Image 1 (tube, rainbow, N blue to C red):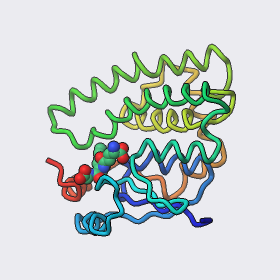
Image 2 (image 1 turned 180 degrees about the horizontal axis):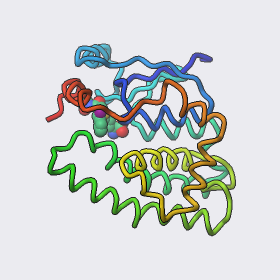
Image 3 (image 1 turned 30 degrees about the vertical axis):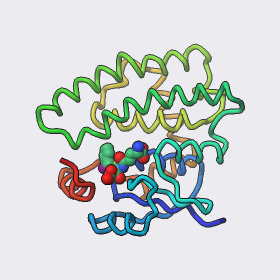
Image 4 (image 1 turned 135 degrees about the vertical axis):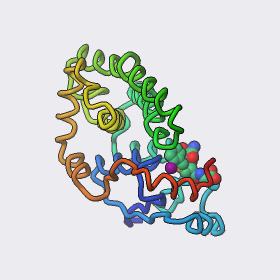
Length: 222
Ligand code: IBG
């Protein structure tokens, strides 16, 4: 106990980035052990430390946590980013569920064939601008507060900010018709813990094409 959480994943965003981002927003320092080759993953498998033979894995509070969503919920609850009651919590879960569905499209993008890539880009734009962003724009407009739930920063805000920033990397103009989300993005990015995380070295850059092959080999994709 008292030790920093240790994150096991490749040196890339993938499924670990939302965990890094949430720890950053909570102001929690963490260490990382990167998988660089398939051998590194096989070593973890051999040691029996991955419950379902998968990463992300986070060593924290004497546990070896797996399953991204479970890890995120634990961190959110522990660092008071998960609402004040069950009603707030389920609302946070609903918002995070929506942003995760959109983020899933973003995360898989580098791994698609050229044909699928085109179609996926269209789908991403469409889902972002007609399904997800209008919901968050309206929620913020209707209650007039700075945060999605309970008038204070929560896991829902951290995950939405991560999503807004990621989608904007692909589509720089995606927020033109969402003025409230534009302001919200700037405000939440300026929260000191988040600003520090975003400008720090633990925030990973978008995946480069040359990393894709290495990652495919590590996980034996296709
Ligand atoms: N439900 C699990 C979670 O949410 O944590 C899924 C975890 C998962 O898919 N892990 C992959 C893995 O360990 C690495 S992330 N695979 C090895 C195996 O044998 O299953 C892979 C991934 C990337 C980018 I990189 C986008 C999507 C998935």
